[in-house]
Length: 281
Image 1 (cartoon, helix red, strand yellow):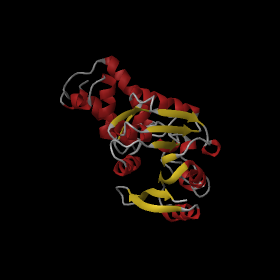
Image 2 (cartoon, rainbow, N blue to C red):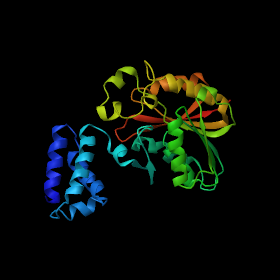
Image 3 (tube, one colour):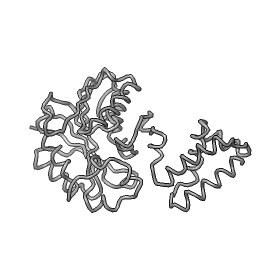
Image 4 (cartoon, one colour):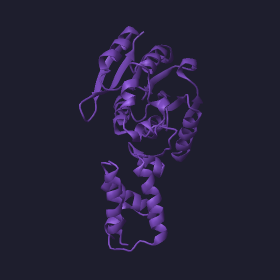
């Protein structure tokens, strides 16, 4: 069979299983099976596929048909300017979280020497993306998942930053070390009802501990804000990602804990997504 025939087959399988990006996914899966680029596939549509590669393609196609995300199938995900190793022990990095990186870089100079704490580091994509561009700064990254910490360490080594970051497998409740210039976090913020409505590629494959946050979705955010009072230096900044319709409640929590709200950043859909606040006592 020719490449284009294989792609047509993949398209039909994925489309019939309600994969919206069925065409792109088929192309990427065939490229993966061949260990080539998507561009190679598209400019060689009349090449004949060897049977051994068709077997590989079908195995990959079955995983995607079952709604497994491509990032987990490929064990990698692009974020900011870099590629990160991921598996289903960590959340898949998303473009919305890049707002945190962008804002930190706006607030710091290239030669600044800051100390960052990344709470719920997951793959480490936030802290690593920042430290790649702020080489005189250092970081601490914590996560309650030991498996996530191991993934983050792998990524730190891959980006040659393992000596810039201390990784700790601990809950923010029990963390008592140092004072930080910045605390950054993409915490769990999905409430129980919204979690029950998530699409299968998220609910079935991504780690629940990194998504679910109780009845109102604020369980972890509340704890994070409270602990940040102790962990931040005076005038230190807390930069955290929030979910839809959480802006007002999170602002109330911040003000209750004597944080000054500097800025609300919106995502590409104009939803409030990141809150920047300052500890002023």
